[in-house]
Image 1 (cartoon, rainbow, N blue to C red):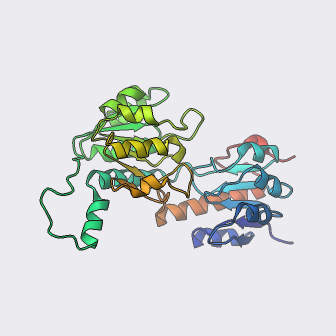
Image 2 (cartoon, rainbow, N blue to C red):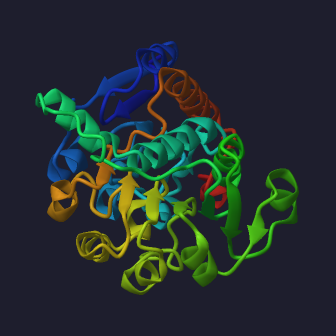
Image 3 (cartoon, rainbow, N blue to C red):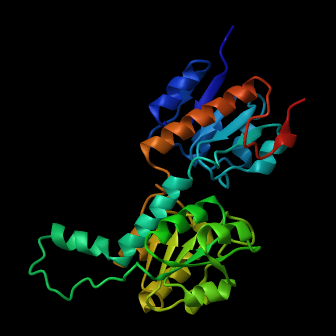
Length: 323
């Protein structure tokens, strides 16, 4: 009896591949990535897709539909998958919301500290042999005791707030609804979107991408922030209007930004790349070996459940069960 066939567009951790191969024949795509046309052709004839963040649009999903039972997203994000098309074609889509919290929170706080203390500029200066080392160069922002504004009150926002408490930060938050449990665990105070922008020294975004949150931070919002303030985004790139952010940074409307996600990944607004007060990371919020091993195992096990006809955990469209 032949094994189920699984397609992995781009290789992930070896442990995940090894686990998949205990039950399935696994085909891995090009390490350099596939063009859209190549992806449409490549996904045909497989029982499941194990995918990192690669755009699975309606035409890609239609191509895999005759045989595919499940799309298992490697991380927590799923906005790269056309869920409606998958549902229409009877394909379950799963993701991993429970395993990325600490690593993403670590990245958010690393970006915050890095921008506050101008580490990108300091590193470049030392590497390029800059001398002398003047006392009044690269003056940064103190983090301890300052006000952190969190947009969102979910798991990652909670983890960032926990880290901030070690720095004695005053924590504000805004969300669609007040979260009394979040307040009890963090001491955070609920304020409006406008007030969090006006009052915060650092603003960190932790919301999913929805029609309501797309371009949540634009020209008007940036104008409300303090001139010394820093914006951190480890959520989704489209939550921020990058063109407006570049303008604000160039004009000194805010002091800096730390970004791990971008509007049109992997393309980055060239203005961001040219600015010394921006710290950029290539969507590496969950990129620790501990996290990758856990995500890989979880994603593989969800594929196994789907192949056995069981509804996999964290399924985004349980109504898509095949007849």
